[in-house]
Image (tube, rainbow, N blue to C red; front, side, top):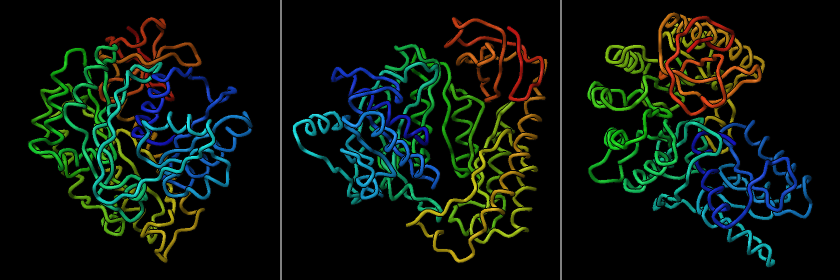
Length: 419
């Protein structure tokens, strides 16, 4: 469940079970062991985590049910009440197979991390995510920012970087296994290298770009402060795709200050300007939270107007979810659910407008896409470098290839193209 980092962690868990001789089956099937990698970034994630744990127990009353991850780290008592046999937090995933063996011999496990500021990075090498054409390379974990709405630093601990040699070895393994595109991810990848001498995010991007076989690199999420002229100049000749995800969260400076975000709308606007000046056809997407405590109608209007002004290529919209243990959950001016939902609906309409306007610019153009799969309508699907969704009439054999297509027609969920 959850974010790209959780996806990487799940791949790590899968790898340890495969190495131990287990067969991986679909979650709905009857299995001997169920592992739920939980998410707690929103209350919705909490609820889904609880339901999946209960579902696993119903699937097979005799199975071993292991709950791991962010929700488990912070809510172990609730997890125990749901009937999980093994309860783990956000560290030591390589030990899970041993914990399963221990349970078979009558020993239950509760392994929660005591974050004391001396965390290390858990490095386990994986071959790649099954059935996908791009893969995720985790280079960092944890966060030091403690934004007012975010529970993640409490679940993941302080920022820490993966050792450089481990990163490059993992990237080479992905390339050898045929992955053309790598997504560099972490909880806060801009912090990569802060605890390593002589390295930063730009340096590791350039090093990964030199690996043969890797044709495209994406960056999972970047704060606006990272986007400087020097940084952009440093990646222009790398394999980084012309698509950047810059979370905004709000287009109101007042709300950004209440959130504890360390930038202003002027900083954000400058980052967008730098990217567009330096990188032709760049796509810029963003995260937006609606109904943050204290967000007035005026604040929301400011936010919506700023989003339109930036002419982003897409939005991820999240109604604010009060998380127990965060500063914002204690704020007095909580916004009613109906207002949050209405504002989210308005921003989703803006998202559709912005994404279609962005895609229209490229009609008639020839662009390379990474073919990712086949849709229910039988058409093949892929993404351009700047993250436009494309479909075309083709064959399953195209999956995993990078093909040049001509973008010919705007459709509801992207663009129809032809080879």
